[in-house]
Amino acid sequence: MTTEQYPSKLLERAVSECAKLPGIGRRTALRLVLHLLGQSSETVHALADSLVRLRDDVKYCKWCHNISDTEECEICANPLRDHSQICVVENVRGVLSIENTGQFHGVYHVLGGVISPVDGVGPADLELESLVERVKAGGVTEVILALNPTMDGDTTVFYIQRRLAGVPVRLSVLSRGVSVGDELEFTDEVTLGRSIADRKQLN
Amino acid sequence: MTTEQYPSKLLERAVSECAKLPGIGRRTALRLVLHLLGQSSETVHALADSLVRLRDDVKYCKWCHNISDTEECEICANPLRDHSQICVVENVRGVLSIENTGQFHGVYHVLGGVISPVDGVGPADLELESLVERVKAGGVTEVILALNPTMDGDTTVFYIQRRLAGVPVRLSVLSRGVSVGDELEFTDEVTLGRSIADRKQLN
Image (cartoon, rainbow over all chains, first blue to last red; front, top):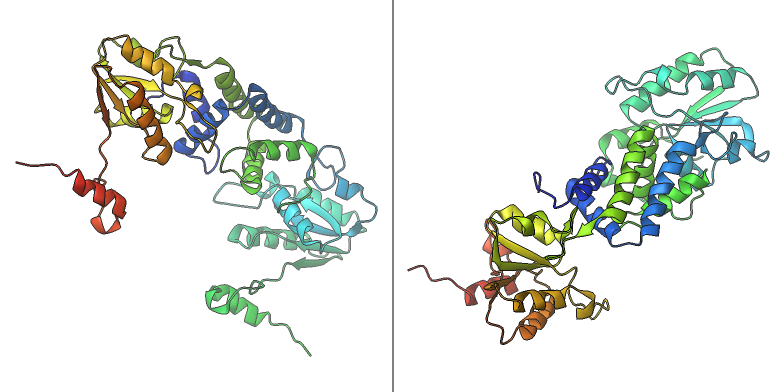
């Protein structure tokens, strides 16, 4: 189904646009588009409008750079949050994941990605300078680096560590180890090795 | 990630709209939406516009009811196609699949679905009356029923067969049997049984 001739240019165009989305091939795009064709005009307009409105009207919090409807996001504006603890995440999904645990009551800093030499993403492409400024401005006691455990994530952690050297702030990363509920025999050896090296004393 | 609080109403709305699409959960919807947020405004407008334009401006061929940009689709308008052979399909995907084989040179009739008592789809909801009229109008020598081999597909075949009883036209269905390149041990027994009963003589 690669070079197939669609019976309509409108159909062809809609399928091509949808197939640009990550993880959506032309076959899935056709299925989605034909589904929309069977929906009411209002439904399709609502979908289209929601995407355009989000893209054009969304704001980013002036403090943490998380997606927000206002200049200052709800978390940063909340006086009950501990503003001395900053959790550094890659993107809004990081914020959502950590908020979901209910274990963190501080504020965030959204980098907008991680340093990736392969993808051509350097420190200047991310909200790293604003993080350093925010920490140096004072009032921050701990910076928790909650980046994905990948090589790019580790590079970014290393960069931040170097940039904050000498600044009197506690720097921490998420603990790595065996997943809760996981079986040891199915845990990869790097993680298992790490969990032995980082073992926690009980008594 | 079911009851999570998005940091923005615009984001929440875009995710909710995308999650209405078949096979797209909220997690995938969030991934798609965040991807779009990283694209240029033009890209997002192009996607939104292509969906709205398709939904609002698409036409259906007055003869075969396939999706078309014009009153008469390219296949029906093509004098080189054999207008005495009508291939009946469920939807545009059926047309694309059969066109892809390069084995059919007649014209189509798109029903817009199949009779499904479970889903509340009756003959009046489909382009069945127009098919009967088209065949009775004359000039048609064969009607090939290329519906999906499901119970609803079979019900629809049976309905068409009854409605065309007495009309001097050849009625045929796609042959069913072992897939080309498939191994017998992995073919389900109903299909294998059918392929023995419908065996083809070679000499």
